[in-house]
Length: 221
Image 1 (spheres, rainbow, N blue to C red):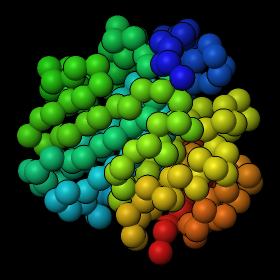
Image 2 (image 1 turned 90 degrees about the vertical axis):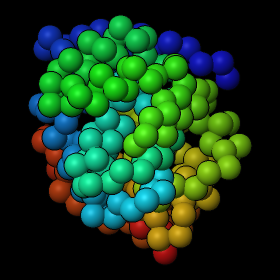
Image 3 (image 1 turned 135 degrees about the horizontal axis):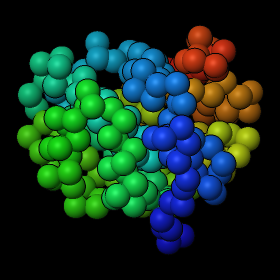
């Protein structure tokens, strides 16, 4: 599938909402706090950080998750590259991404360096090796040769974007997870949890962020 550009509208002044999936790219309450709660803490980060650590993600979106992880990486004292691979079918236009990230002034030093090194698919910096793989993850993930230590499962709502949460794709996530790796997501939808369990993950339900009562953490033994 050829990647298509994201089409969006803006809510509450600074929150981008996908027209295709009718879902916001991050929490209407505080996207940065949500990322830290769900994807960092949900994967035991930054405590698990070590040289060579590799994060993979379904849904690059605004880049907020990557920037938050990269900032945490450097703040944890890591001075080698964080490896980050994201799979994105509908990339956001640069001007829309810039507008969305303006909502997080705390991340401005990382945003500025990201833009300076960003080629549209890669960003190679002394403390970051980012690759965004464009296209349908159901096709691009099986062809990927990498294995992640932690997964950020951040597709749009399973009710509105079920394709990114199906058991076959969760099996590919597991197949591309390093031994002892983890995954985390904001959703606690039953079919997502069952798909992760069928793929070999041990799945736990944890308190969610904001209005979401629960989220999911998964561990691959």
